[in-house]
Image (cartoon, rainbow, N blue to C red; front, side, top):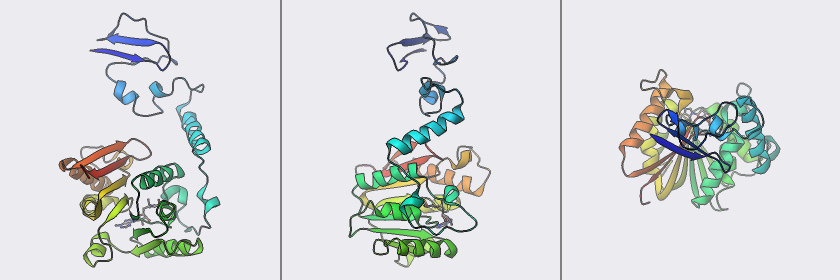
Amino acid sequence: MVVTVWDGEANRVCRVGGVLGRFAPVKLHGNFEYTSDHTWVERSFPTQRALSYLWSGSDPAEYESALSGFMFSFGRLDDPRKRFDLEEPTDWTIEQMASSPIQMAFFTFLARTVGARRILEIGTFVGLGAMQLAAAVPADGLVVSVEKFPVFADIARRNVERNGLADRISILTGDLPSLVADGSVASGFDFVLLDGGKERYGEFLPICIDLLAPRGLIVMDNAFFLGDAVNEKPTTDKGRGVRASVEYARSRDDLDLSFVPFSDGILLIRRRGG
Ligand SMILES: C[S@@+](CC[C@H](N)C(=O)[O-])C[C@H]1O[C@@H](n2cnc3c(N)ncnc32)[C@H](O)[C@@H]1O
């Protein structure tokens, strides 16, 4: 196999089979060299040496912090506590449970790009995701957010109220299939964030697809589920649920799929031709 790549500057690196070919290999960061076996893997994740070898540090963990700082600074991101007057639960932090500012910037960007007017979120926690998504819909738009546990739903409602967003966000307590069956959640969503009930993703994803408006987009968070969904036989209920949902998505050839290898894995889903 012949692999020829540009090293990001003006140097060409070539490997033919296991032997370096007619172009002299360029000395890259440390002992880094592209190989025919790993090129796509190495070029998919920013912390891989292939995509970080020009960074001046050497510890990958430090590179992650540097990347985060870079994205916060140049992406104009901030701690959401500065933006919202936020009640938080005592047993979980927003750092543990809510989507990160980097994720939310991506999600709201996508929601704006599809011109979302109606957004559905599964998994509200304390309403932080819903409040950020509300900024992506027009004044007459709506974010419907479904939360299983009343303790979180109640905090979320108070957060929505104290931040003046009650006209644009509806928090529903309960179970998605029941809420659809009783008409509390009706179809026609331009954007769906599936981010709660991982053990039931296999059941929730087909429902979310049915709830989509014709050109709607589903963003499914935790698509790797901490690596367990990547196991052929996941070891946890949540891993099995997420695995079932990606298997289902793959089986539907009327869907466009795109994995974003960021955070715990994000799967973007839309109807082909929609
Ligand atoms: C990761 S948090 C959601 C974070 C939120 N989307 C945000 O960005 O701020 C997951 C939430 O889903 C909720 N949840 C768990 N199972 C659920 C289910 N079956 N239906 C709806 N919500 C569920 C959890 O209680 C938790 O609040």
